[in-house]
Image (tube, rainbow, N blue to C red; front, side):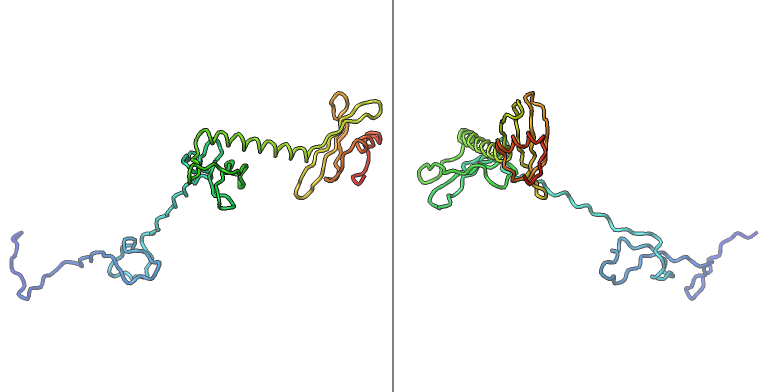
Length: 228
């Protein structure tokens, strides 16, 4: 068998090739409409494949998760300078007076829309006196006292109590107003000499608790209409 190789090449420069050489796969890119995939996301396809052929690789856009919004504190907690001071859930702030001729200081509890205390503030020459730890402590005591008085007044308005004698016994009768937005009412309750509740009844929010009304309620065996 002759295994010698022939070095006789055609004179026209053409080469005989056994079989069809597969063409290299390439990326196809044309002008893309708005919103189309970017070139790095295109699927590979052969030169003899139609651009409309189904993509061989399913490409998905990356999911962008927004960063959480920063938490902004409601008050000036921890801020301490000449015009504002925050500590223990309260903040003090030096402001211009309403008459624009002087200065005032307001004390506000964190989360509250209205200040608990507003009063004139001292001057140091041509400027308001700077805030400090001792001044803030004094303002805090005053603001706390104001809130306590307001709470007591509110409680006095919503809670009434009388002591009467009826049926050879002494009774404590209370009236607690419930300022409900949709169903304002009051609760009338009687306590005997041992402090035990003997009766309780729902009445109108504008019910007037007097000694005579309490005695009449007890003597009628705790029965009368809300209109009485």
